[in-house]
Image 1 (cartoon, rainbow, N blue to C red):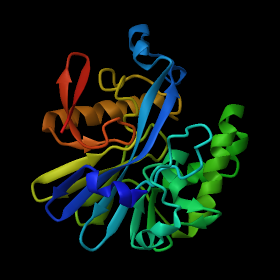
Image 2: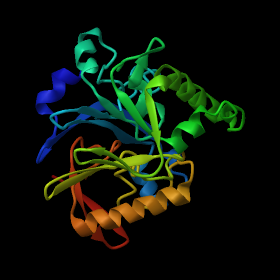
Image 3: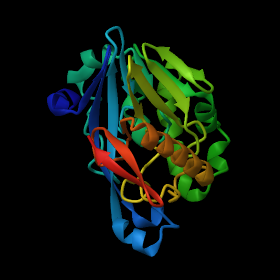
Length: 279
């Protein structure tokens, strides 16, 4: 449960902002999900690689903002070490009610599964912020008939998860300033409307990259390493390289959903790629 791990969760304070990382568990992803990895690289992820499952809580003084909610119980059959935040627990009803905003970085089930249970929204008082391109893509009723057979269960699950929260969704295109130093910006490629978060207060800033990078074992050293679930692999790689260059040059701290580090770090540029240094 979230409240049981809060005291040990990595936290950064940026002036009036406080951002805390919370782990929803982890996933074991097969090496086949990185089809173009060099044989020497593939040894790092064979037979599988460990993905973290991080989410974030942003407190501004006036608002309580979640960035993604984890997977709930929806993925436990395949990935038993997920859903550890336990947002569906009755003991968290009051805490869920205090959440004012939820930033949905994208609509893969490991990011939105914690939003609802039993066909009901778990966060009835929250405004949900989603890129219009993301929402329109996944909720298109024709989508399930246009994807490959092995993707149909994924699409069906996402569409089922979207229905209970539809009335709370606010759509935007491009950058969205939520105020108080919280800025959403497009980071496309992983999904059509994937977005990341920039937090700033005074001279301090931090990025929450969501799934811009999914494999710390492969994609820091080789940002062009393709992940099978990316809807546009070339665009995803271009987004990754652009943001990595910026982060390394500025030495700005960041976190990402699937890093095994449940916390923040910085990038250092090296030959052919980058190196991650945990704070």
